[in-house]
Image (cartoon, rainbow, N blue to C red; front, side):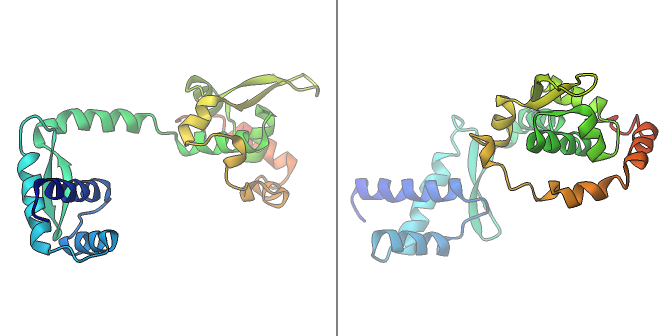
Length: 209
């Protein structure tokens, strides 16, 4: 591993290993990985030398992140100068998270669609006006039509954005809906009468989404 091409090749592999690892990577782990990949022992001195060059490379101002040593290993971290913008992004993303009430409502709609709001409320046992509206505002559900039952209530279903949000390509990729078996549903709200009472008494339960 003496010529420049080999050195660059080794350095690039080490960069990739550190970059993709969720936790600090130790020299011993890098050594074991590279030795297996190359089918030959890779001297630890060569690895340490490559790490030093990587550290020097990313210390330049043109890079927004740098190599950091922690817990006996190495990892890439953003530089302090960019923490403010990262903090804003994380705060904005946290605001986009769905509340428990919204997630429960969305789960029922996803597995039982097309479904009316009344049917969702019968399963959850609480009023779902606020949660449904929030899910509509976020573009995760939409009106799919109207039921043929009395009053012809609107039926809801998930959208393409729903699949993007949860990283799936098709509704068949959703986990098996074990929580929505008839046995579980029948125990959520006691009886039909008690469900209606609960719904009426909890009109404001979904005040956050």
